[in-house]
Image (cartoon, rainbow over all chains, first blue to last red; front, side, top):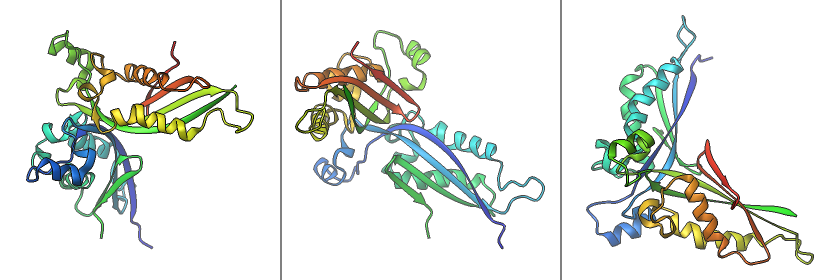
Length: 138
Length: 136
């Protein structure tokens, strides 16, 4: 039987955003994104679940030290996005529409270089309690 | 007397900023909540009314009507909006959760029919931060 096991860390951040494609006119943006395109922004309490999968280390019994994972998420994600306007305050979304999908992909790319290559990384991001995305998927 | 609660939710941007203070003082008091480009929340709104159940319907108040009143007079005004800029009943007020709850109370109070009394506005700014206002 495989000894692989998944560990999870949950963090959260609050941010403003709007969905807007600058190549489209306002009418098209409104048609596609509805009130998510409103010009003065709106916001969310984002809930982030980070999953790391792998074999526990023989000496520690850890897949990864959860405290270290928490600190990594705080440094790479929380400090970048918490209490920010994703469209205006972050370089990651200057040209990228900050949908939940894109935010999850960006978070994956921010965390991946800091996690052991032999471990798998998965991101689940809740934009609201009822809207959430996962990345990567098969 | 029975208390009846309806839960609604909305998403909005805001910032905490007192225009009579310097930028530094706002930063000192409100920290990152003062960020000039806003941040935002998923707000959860619990509206509680009270009354005696009607003998014919068994209802304190038709909860469908309560939902419609909340949507019309509150959610339509605040959902996917910027509370500081877009919301008429928050103009000139600090956009704290406390003041937002009081603003929502006033909006609903004005539109609820006489047979039912507003009891409480409970407003969650995050899953771990909420305020309650009883109209006192």
